[in-house]
Amino acid sequence: MLPPAKPKSWNHAAAAHLLGRAGFGATPMEVVSFFKLGRAQAIQAVLTVPPVAEPPQLDPDDKPPYSGIASMTPADKLIFIKKNQQRDRLELQTIRQWWIGQMLQPPSAFLEKATLFWHGHFATSVQKVKSAGMMLQQNQLLRKFAFGNFRDMVKAISCDPAMVIWLDLQQSRNGAPNENFARELMELFTLGIGHYSEDDIKASARAFTGYRTQRRQGGFDYYEDQHDATEKTFMGKTGRFSGDDIIDIIFQQPACATFICEKLWTFYASENPEPGIVAGLANTLRKSDYELRPVMKEMFGSEAFYNAQSMGTQIKSPTQLVTQTCLTLECPPPPGFSLKFIMTSLGQLLFAPPNVKGWDGNRAWINTATLASRQQFTDALVGLGDKQKGGFQSKVPLGKLVTNETLNDSAKLIDDLTHRLISTGIDQATRAELIAETDKYPKPLSQTAVRETLSRIMRLPEFQLV
Image 1: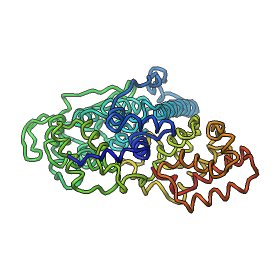
Image 2 (image 1 turned 120 degrees about the horizontal axis):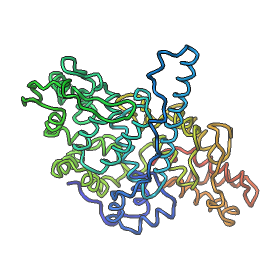
Image 3 (image 1 turned 180 degrees about the vertical axis):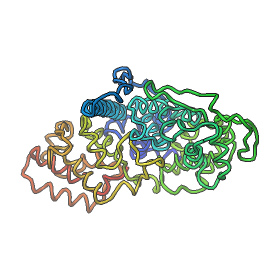
Image 4 (image 1 turned 90 degrees about the vertical axis):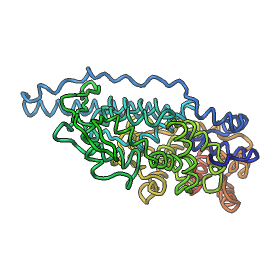
């Protein structure tokens, strides 16, 4: 077990840290309320599954079938395909907007952050799946198991229609097994490189033959006549293994708990965790029979989660940047296709990870292009720069962020806004520079002056960290 955090280390900064890492940040008032709960009750709140809003209804029967496309003229075929593609794009944007909306709801934020972790872990892209309905179905599956049993989640994801298509289980049959899912199951989902052999991949692939999905309805099918029911030897065990049998054997390997606990710590706390941290969490995971909630409770309650290596050291992912900025500025997210444009330019378009490994994260989020996009997004959000960039207008409620006092006091304004936007604070030299810049504006400050001050703060390196 990891050493628990000392009671005296629970303060407003620690509460803000937990809100930012387990969720997507909070307003100053929400941080105060969270702090008053105390650490134990705050962690309990993080791991409590709230009622989830009904997802958008996508009607598969509303899509015209492709069965008659062969008899169409080239012109009619092109019109037909374009209409279907447009419908798919609209449905996909609908579920992206819904998911971001869930992230912005305080009771749901913690569950959605965990769902985002699993989306990156079991990275599946609509670019190959080509079905918003299937992607939403997988999203719901990840949400269902986000704080649940990891073994059960892996078994469920092996039967998930989007995953069946994404890793080519649809093409795997007796006598011609496809190895893609079998390889990624061990390399990326459960064990990591070095803990399995090529023979294990071949045996596992045979066990997962016969998995199918219905592209139109999005259901899962198992075709027994296409399953290889012969004997297989996998990780030293021999039998007529099914896919679930393979997963059970994988979860008997010590490396499985170590692998996923290192990923959890890296996502929620810090990179390159000490071996003792991972070993402690992995031991808890094994003792709990792969229930995730005890591990996360131990992680969020540990001393290491609140130390200098963890607090304010993680680069915000694009999703974190968009949601946390909107939360702290108390404004809605960009609407419609503006959201897609922004998330694409920032480097994390939901439901479209770049490959089966998902997003690299942390330092990979920042380069010359994405840093410029981050600044363009925050400028547009507060109503500066090219207002057509991303196609949305600012809805930041400046009246909630300033008072008559702060409009006449540069130091007070800077302290209020940096406290709201940068939970770890800024150094005195940076504070002095910000005050000096704000002092150049006549008092009381105009809306333009406030917007430019917000922009200046959000261009600080500290703002990119959580």
